[in-house]
Amino acid sequence: MLNFKAYDHINLTVSNLEESVSFYQKAFGFEVKEEGISTGFGLDYIILGLSHRGFICLYQAKEKIPERSRINHIGIHVDNLAEALPLLKEQKVEIVPYGNEEGLVTYPSSKSVYIKDPDGNEIELSDNFGGGL
Image 1 (cartoon, rainbow, N blue to C red):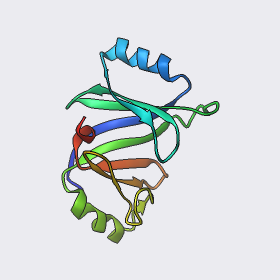
Image 2: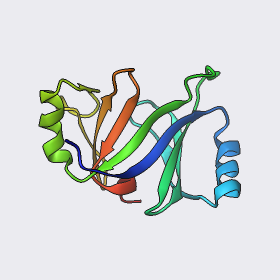
Image 3: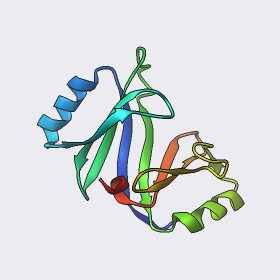
Image 4: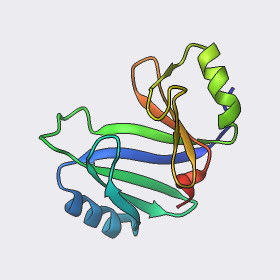
């Protein structure tokens, strides 16, 4: 079993990155924590939020976004990611093959494994809340 600690982030695709950043800053007082171009998808992104409370990661869409496909994944912080990987495989949970062949993605201050639920919804399991932001 995964040791759920907290919801970590929501990852969204947006049609206008600047407009969306402005909305979340004004509506919730979110601060920009990180920005760049994703290595896996080549899309501009910005992570906003409040440290130790929660984050939202916004990706700039390359084309018009279908109405029902804006949430890319949810992030969940677990405190036993190392032990979880063999357990997930044993339970035949679908692991998305990002990172290495084991499915482990290494970021500057955290590690993540991406899985899918029975309906194909992607969930990022991370070992460090907010990737240490």
